[in-house]
Every structure is written in structure tokens, then in C-alpha cells.
Length: 573
Image (cartoon, rainbow, N blue to C red; front, top):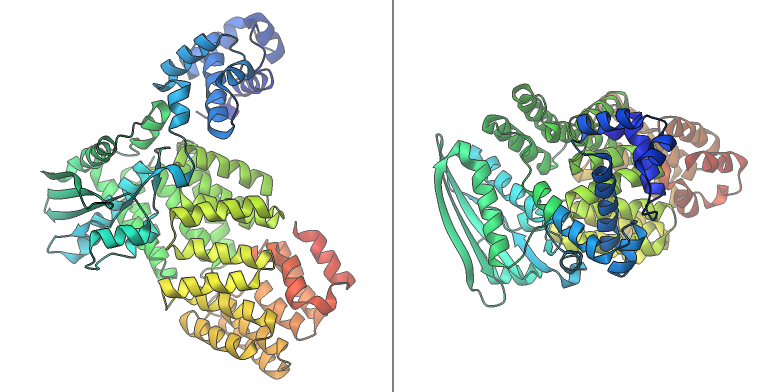
């Protein structure tokens, strides 16, 4: 329930939060402060929460206590006082009733990544005769990763790192050592008409010992139960327990319709390809088909929002179309279910990259982290927020968390390279770019990062090699612009203007951002024309302009005191 939709409940929550340390607040005093009669407040709470006033307040206090246990080193008695429960014995009793765990046991299960039990879920093999069923085996793998990621005591490696080993015949213990995990789960899926055979095998990396193994012969409609059984068996095998709300979130089902679920998995399959416009559009078509069957399928809406955001960010579609669809899909997902982490993540990305609203983006991201466990992508976005705000320490911490959780993810390494660049660590950015190329030699982003950072140390020949490769791998405004900047840095003005002409030609069929054009004009010395494009970029909230002060530092240093540039800097963030 979204309490902000009910002003009385929202005011009650704010009052409780502002008076948490006051244990003896009476119902009459609360009603006076909230501005409603006792009977009216009782009716609202009964209708919306099925709780009396006293239990609603206690529940709010305990949620705050849970956050304090998670995020502070306060003693349990201090936390009890901080949330207005003066008796530590009562606090422990209430907490155990609410979360099925004592405060002490709950805190024991919240460990730094380096101290947690670590596990990687390898891509389940598609043993079906039909290769088109690959989406199904991939989807089962991803769903199990999502469930396990809800467990505070586990460090679960991200999908990107484990899918690097898809289709490779390697010794499982060698894979475990590369990924630096304690346990590996491997499995296979055979699907024939509506019949399923799923096998799963949990192995200890240290000694190769088989901790647990099982085969499931079921019908397709049982897929939800099978995924839950596998996850529960893993937790039992490695002696980890889920508590209260965490258990509810981990095993939450967003649909019971297996056809809608199959369509959703196909949407995720094409989204995860990250192959470009066609794959994202295909992904959207599957998400929309799932919604036709299950109109309240919130994750499908958040998937649509993420597809459009990527197509906007990487210049695959015009911003007018993308931004409208991002907002519609994000709002619909939140409206349907505010407990889904993907919705808050999509919202946070939109708020940061489209709206430049750091405060709201951070709030959404905090909610995503709270609901979605310890996922790498959330830490990467957090690192970017802190980096743009100049908080190097916090940005570095979240970058490290992201790379620990998903070290072979191109997405996380790409974000990490931007953080190195922001902080002026060009060698670190180049190293991150080379790391991406080791993971995937054909990834344009690795060559792009290497090229733009080599320019700073005037290693133009090597920068040109890297950027030409990036251009071959991804012919876009982003890579054309980088090549144009390099031409300007080398003093090759005509060549730079040739790249501007190529971008204008490309814009007839594929979006080229105002920033892409503006930066090349600026490096070529035409700061007046550059600033016209930068002004348009600001009006459209193009994400590249979030980095404008670093762009001035590295590529427009000659114009750092120009009044036109200074005015643009004031308008960014």
C-alpha cells in the first residue's frame, strides 16, 4: 500500500518517525497531532492495514529498529531506546514475533561481503531438442539468483559473471576459483511440450564435495514450486536461514500464470542480450504480451521502462518517445506493486539520468536496495551518484561492492571506469577498459574507455587505434564524437569537421545527441556553436551533461573561464 495516497496515514507515519524515541505517546495525543478523530483513524487503519493504532505504531518502530541493526553498530539496548521501546526484553520479544528472529540472530546474518558465504549459480543447460527454449533455462537461472540475493548472509554473484561460462566445458572447481566463491550451483532443463525435467547440483568449491543434488519431473505449471524448492534446498544445504520479511520477499510471486511467466522470461532473455535496438524492441514485445495475460504484472512494466531507458541512453531511439514510455512504465510498475525492487531501480535511473534529481534518485535507490537484496547494479548506480557529488570514498566503496558481486559484468566495469575518469585516475580507467576487453574483446565500450583516457596523456596513436575499433564495433554518435574530439586534440581540424558531417548524416536515421556534436565543435575551437548545442543538451537533460565539469577539465580547458561555459556549468547540477 502506498501510504502517500492516504494523507492521514502519511501524516501518521511522519509523526511516528519524528517521535520514535518517545515511548509513552497516547492515541489521543496522536489523533490531535494528525488532525483526525480516534474513531476515524481506527477505521482507516482497520481498512488499510487491519491493525489497531498501537500495533501499527509498534510495527513502524520495529521496521526502524531493523534498519538500525542493519546499518549501524549501536548496541541492541540503544536501538530499543532509539525506537521508543524502553524494555530490552519486550523489544527482543516484539522483534522476534515480527521477523521470526531475535535481534542478535538477525544482526549475525548481516555481514560484509567478504565475510559472507558466497555462491554462484551457473547457467542451467538447455537439454531440450528445441534451441529456442534457451530463454527458459536462462530464466530459471536468473530467478534462482534473484531469490538467493534476498538472503543477507549470502554473497551471490551476479548473472553477468556466471553467464560468461555458458556453454564452456570447464571443471567446476576451476570456475569456482575464478569466481572466488564457496559454492557453485549447476543444473539442466529438459522441456518437452508441457513436461519438465530439471536437475540441480550444489557443489563445495573447496573440496568438490556434492552438498545436494535433486531431479524434478513435473509439468510446466509447477515451475514456480520447483524454483522455490531448489532455493530452499540450497539454503538448508549451506545452513543459512531466512527471516520474516526477507523470506516473504524472496519467495514472492508476481504471477501464478505460467504462460505470462514464460513470456516474461523471453522478455528478460532479449533484454539481457544487450545487443541493441532490435533486441530491446523484441524484449518489449514479450513484456507487453505478458501484460496482456496478466495486466498487473509489475516486473514486466519495470522491464519495459529499462528497455526504453537503455535505448534512450545509447541513442537507439529519439528521446521524445523513450522518455514518455520510461515514465509511464515506471509509474505503472510502482502503482501496481511498490515492493518490487526493479521498479525503484528503473525509477532511480530515470530520476538521475533523465531528470538530474539526485535526492529522489537516492531515495528510490535506497528503497530498491532495501527490497532487492545485495545486487551489483544497485551499487553501481549508487557509486555514480556519489561520484558525481564528489564523495570519492562512498563511490569507491559502492564500486568495490558492485565488482565483488559481479566482477565479469561489462555494465559494472563500464560504470567503474567512469568513476576512475571522474576522479582524474586516467590510468585506473584505462585498466578498467582493458579489463572489459579481456572479458569481451568485441565490446565497443572497452575500446571507447581506453581511447578517451589515452587522450589525456597525449598518447594519440594508441587512442586512435582504440577509438577506431570502438567505431567499427558501434557506429554511433557516441563513438563518432570521441573520434572527432581526438582529431581536434591532434590539431586535425578538417578531420574533426568530417566527423561532425558524419554525425549529422547519421542523425537522419539514428539519434545523435546535442552533446555529441557540441563537444567536437568545442574542441575544434568553435565554442559559440558548441555552447548552442550544450544549451539544447541541457534543455533535453541529456545524461552526458551530468559530466560537463569533467569534460571542461579534460577537453575544454582553454575555455574554462569563458562566461558562456561558466553559465552552462551552473545549469548542469
